[in-house]
Length: 473
Image 1 (cartoon, rainbow, N blue to C red):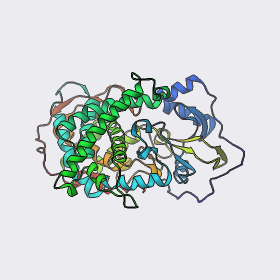
Image 2: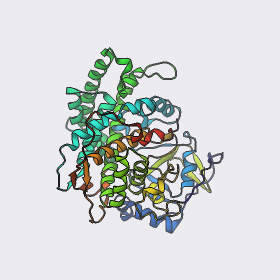
Image 3: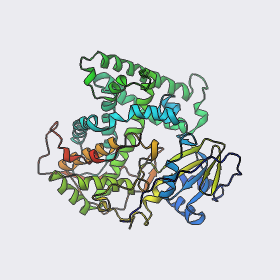
């Protein structure tokens, strides 16, 4: 494996107020390029990089004029630019999540919210969620059809949604059922609102915006009931669900979070935290069914109680099939210097994750599915970026890694995945994630060796996420 030396970004002055704009060269705007960015993004960006260089300018749907970066060293520099110079940008996400969501925050406000959200996803709190993940997995896979091909993404979505609802809200009974029905419908509807700005206007009682507000009111009503129940629990101080942790959390000035702030953050975690993980799991099953040698090694390790190859396999799935293809920053000052260019206010910078993940300079033989490249080492911070990077790296990255590890381990101790020689499933854009076109089709048979019983203790060696590096605060 190629070794990338990690060096801190140089301390340079990024502000270039008053200097003339100098954008990298790039392709002219064409409807075909816009369509290919959605439907054939990795190949389009590779062609543009070969033609125009490692940084090029193009118009991207939903973002506008954007400088695309295709080298880890550039990612490193971008992630070290102060957030008051180049801030995070997720187009219109506050439409659904609200002003209190971490997605809509910049600079000091973003850091303040991140300090509140990060602890629940690490250490002792995270370990407490392992048995819950295994329990929900066993419930779902008990009904898997044996000997018949089926799309795993339907199951992985249900597993991930149930897990995140229980982890985030501590919900049970009626509230759990209401959230399980409401949130997928609301999230899919919100994805449409994000991308079509006229739908964000109030056209009257039958407008999509009014429907969105009605679903938000329903969510807030469920949340208030859960807050009352949590605070009335005699064991409230020991509860590990994220709702309770946020109710106990305090800002730096000692003030509690408002219920509106908590609601905005929790719906953010649900929306951002289940579909991407579910899609990565579907890709994992799709990859393993086509690589029987890798699958055999993985099953053997899991049977022996190990987790090193499991961790490497998860990293390789995310390298070869990242569900989110890039991270975006927006220039917030009048002019910003980035290398030899000067970028004007409002221009975006986009890290082309899939290009770097498939660049032989950083990952030899990138077309091969080879978990061994990650054995005994963590992925490079700037060459492997499925969770983004810098201070805006996904706050739930460690949780997602744990979740994938427990789910894969549980499935592979219960079933044998049948190998297939069918062609790889196409990568298709599903509005947020890049997903397998056929949903991660597999066929399974039950293993002769009995799996661990539900609720059995989880061995600490079974989940590699405990050794992951902490995220930046």
